[in-house]
Image 1: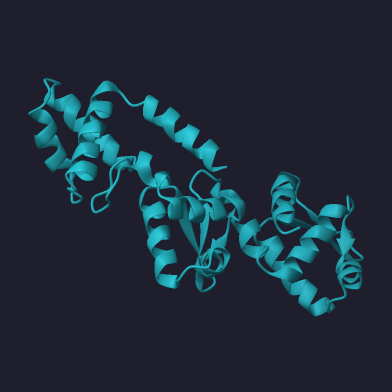
Image 2: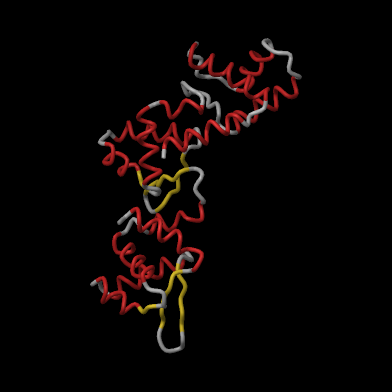
Length: 235
């Protein structure tokens, strides 16, 4: 997965215009070789302006866009294309790619690192937009930045083992099912199942089918792929 992400990054870098590529090269020299970490847009603009004859307007716009796209982040000791050169950044990012919706504790346990060191790596990946964070309950959950935010709730709710069992049962049944059928299959109390189903329905991940006699539930068609992906991760 990391190899694929590196290729994507290289491709994106290749799409930068001449002004941006030159400015980024100067920024890399300043940040990495001269350790000028607090490099802000106007600082870079003034330095690059002295080294090139690009029109100032093009230079200003190009540098502004580099910062907006997080190729350069003030306070960091490398540019975006060098973030994944750091092994610990690779490991944390790989874990998030493999387990979207994980929290800081998951990162700590998964990589056997301290809370402070987990946060340090997460913060860097967040600043450079490799990942994004979503608050769920009392925690921040982390997702690859490229992943659609519409899928977040599937991963959030799937953190609960009972909800995952319900999701799997719904996924494996093509027809709508009752709360009783689910409770009997996964051996959980109906009242507990009902609470989980209500949350899934509220998040628009499942539909409620009411034929006038009994209420049934089924997965929304547009959510089947998301369900399958999440269930594969937690298999």
